[in-house]
Figure 1 (cartoon, rainbow, N blue to C red):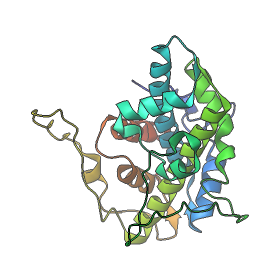
Figure 2: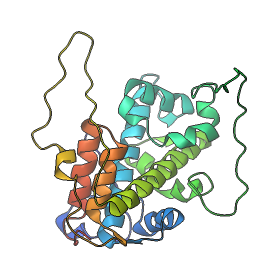
Figure 3: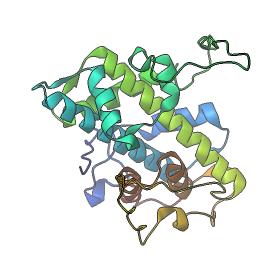
Length: 260
């Protein structure tokens, strides 16, 4: 499915080109980055990160919408989210949220120590500092915009899960982007190809995004730029349609801004 981002009230850098933009505002993106790194985040990097997050959430909501449609429902429930992820492994993002959500309880497995005893789950932090969990509510408005754009609503528990997944995903994206800046490029990466048993895997794309972004060629060591976000996206999303779409839409969303 081609994602259909909604248009927020405030115009963005791509308004003139007619490209739809993410409902996650750059100011929100920068707030998440401040929780992770002291590096400066360029304007184009903020728009790119917002676009990637919007693309990912749109695809997750679309998968849940399809699951609900099979039961003739337009109101999404947590079970629809599980169905979407079960049908498309590319949607299994923002995994740090899973430990905090009743929806995913029991799906992350039981941990055992060296002596075979069950390791109790970690308690939630009481820190006042914002995190992927504490700050998840910041994404509610954007999530509801994406739901409306697909003609569906969701029960509060699912809205909370989508908030949390968006927050955890963007937090991980910020960490990886900061790592790209520190290390001067993508140092560790791999590629995953999906194929049915007995079938040959599809040939690699002619323009593999990982090959395009292994080395950081511009910017300084104190600023996260657009290309750093694109490189981080290749780390967060393995080789598949979702990653290619996220990269393409992020480039379109920032085509009228400096690469940072």
